[in-house]
Length: 195
Image 1 (cartoon, rainbow, N blue to C red):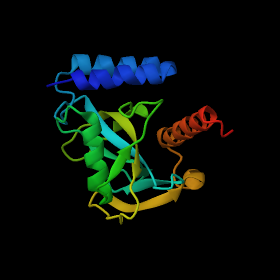
Image 2: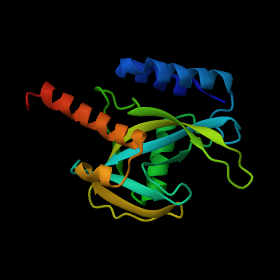
Image 3: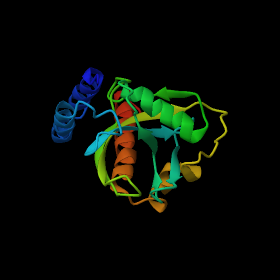
């Protein structure tokens, strides 16, 4: 199972977010000790990919009310062996939103740097034991003029004004995605003399 690209993404992440060395190192350790980490058959847990999607105007974020987990979350899912994690994030964004056209937004000047890394526990259900999702998250922006299409995995799907995000979720990792996006935006404005 090819993990080279994943390791490159993690190294880029660590350079872009130097204060998050510990989580990047933890991901690298997990990938090093689990050759099958890109497959959902990796029982302790597996790599997943998700997308923090901004509206064309950049003032709204797309959330799904996850059918199984019963919470408002960003779109994403299993990579299912895809070694280019960003392609899995794009596929999940397309499948779960019905939209096809997205742009990867740069993180600290580079398009293929994850916005965030997160490890979270998925509870046991049916024949599936409790396990961890090692989520690699990317910042995307949807192209204009694309209607949303609800997938079978969602109870609801909607654009949420960024300023109202806390009315829909208290999930720390989701709020962190928003905070990091704002941090990037503030940095861009400062570099361009807009503050």
